Amino acid sequence: MQSGQLAADPAAATVTDAAELAFATAQRSEQLRRILLPLAGGAALLLVWWALVEIFQVKPFIAPAPQVVARTVYDKFGLLMSNLAPTAIEAIGGFVLGNFAAIVTAAVFVHSRNVEQAFFPVAVLINSIPVVAKAPILVLLLGNGLAPKIAIAAIICYFPTLVNMVRGLQAVSPQAMELMHVLSASRAEVFFKLRVPSSLPFLFSALKIATSTATVGAIVGEWIGSQIGIGALIIQATYNFDSALLYATVLCGSAFSVMFFLAIRAIELSVVRWETGVAP
Amino acid sequence: MSLAPALQCEGVSVRFVNNRQSVTALDGVSLTVAAGSLLTVLGPSGCGKSTLLRVMADIVRPQAGEVRVLGTTAEAARHSRQIGFVFQDATLLPWRNVIDNVRLPLEVGGHPALPPGASGPEELLRLVGLTGWEQALPHQLSGGMRQRVAIARALLGGPRILLMDEPFGAVDEITRDRLNEELLRIWRETGTTIVFVTHSIYEAAFLGTEVLVLAANPGRVREIMPILLDEPRRLRARETPEFMRQAAHLRAVLETC
Image (cartoon, rainbow over the protein chains, first blue to last red):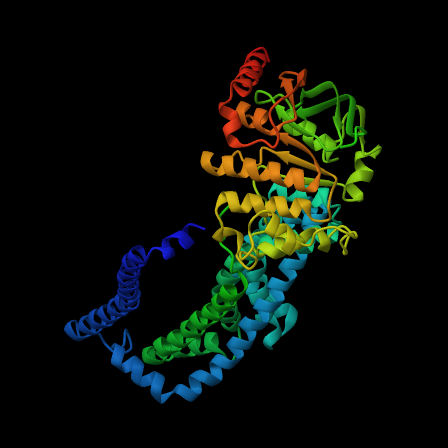
C-alpha cells in the first residue's frame, strides 16, 4: 500500500531508483568479497605449507609439499576414484538407512511417550559407544563386505537425526495445536500438515551434520580388514610411508564429504523456503 | 438481528492444576451472547478472559457448568464449523503462502467443501483487503497483514461465531485503529456473532455492543455493560462525550476488579 503511494510520485521514484542502484552495487561487491576472501585464505595456507616444507627440508615421507600432493592426485586419479566409489556407496547407503530409521523412530516417539521413555535411554547408551569400538563388533557380525560399513555409517547418522527430529516434530506452538483442534483435525492431519513441515529445518540441520559423520563412519569401517575404499587406502599408504598418497586420499575423502554436504544444502534451499526461527 | 442467543454459559468453572497447585481460572461464570452482537471481554490479566474464549471454542473443558453454542454443545458447534477462532499470534503456517493458509480449514477436519453461499478464500482475502497478496509467504507480511490473513482463515466456511483472543494486541496503534474499523465493517457485512477479548478499554468500548468486565482471582463476571454509540461507528466516535463517559465508567469498574 505504501509502496504504491511512493511510486506515484515521480521525484520520489528517481530517488528510489538511485538508492536501489547503490544498494545493488554494494550487494554485488559484498558477494564478491564473500567468494574471494576464503579463496585468499586457502591460498595463504597452501603457501605457508609449501614454505614450511621448503625451509625445514621436511622429508617427503613425513609430510609432502602441496605440489607433490597435487601431482599424486593427478597421477593416481584412477586408483583414488576406484577406492572412493565403495566409500561413497557406503556413506550414502548408511546416510539413507540411518536417517530413514531415525525419522521413523522420531515419528513413533512423538506419538507414544511410553515407547520414547523405554527406548530413548537405550538409544543414548548405544550412541555413547565410540565408533572405533562399534566397528569391530559390526565387522564380526556382518562379515567383510559393504554391509558392516553401511551399518556403521547408518548408526553414526542415526542419533543426531533422531534427537533433532524429535525436537522438530515437537517444536509446534501451542496455538497452532489449538488451531488444529478448533478445526477438528485428526492426529494424522496434525502430523502431516503441521508437525512434519515444522520439523524440516531441524531435519536438514541434522542431515547436514550426517553427511560428514556418514563419511567418517564408512572410512573408519574400512580400517578393519578391508582391501578397498578410502579407509583401506589410508591404512596402506601410512604403512608404506607413502605420505603423498596418504594426503591425496584424505583430500579425496574430504572433497567427497564437502560435495555431499553441498548436495544436501541445495535440497534444503529448495525445500525450506520460509523464514525459520521467526514466530509464525 | 434475531434475539435468540448464540452463546450461553451457565455457571462455568475452570480449574487448572499447576505445580500441584489448583488455580481457579473461572468461577461460576454465566452470560448470554445474543446472535449478531459483538461482545468485548475486558479484565485485568489473570481474570480468565482467554480461558472463557477457549471454553466457548471447546478447547478447554469446564469442570462445572454448561456451555450452549447455537443451541447445541460447544463440541458439536466446533465439529460443524460454526466457530472461527483468531489467536493473539496470527498462527499462520510459515511454509504456506497466504491463500493456502486461508484454505487450511478445507484441508483438515473433514470439511473439504464450502457450505452453499459461503465466501471462498479469494473473496475473504478481498474482504480483509489483501487482494494481490495471495502468493506471499507469512514472513513477507507485516504483523497487521498477518492478522488479517488469520481473520480470513477464521471466516472460511462462514462460521456464525467468531472468537477473537486479543488479536490486535501486538500491532501498533495506528494499524490497530484501522483494523478495528475494518472488523466492524466485516461484522456488519457478515452478521457474524463476535466475542472479542482485549485489555484495552478503548478497544472494548469502541468495538462492543456490550462489554463484559471480568474480575480476577478467581475469574468471575463483574459487570455486563451495553455500549450506546451512533451506528455505524467511526473512529471519531471515541472523541465524543458519550464515549468518554462510558469508557470512564469501564475504567472505574476495572479498578474494582
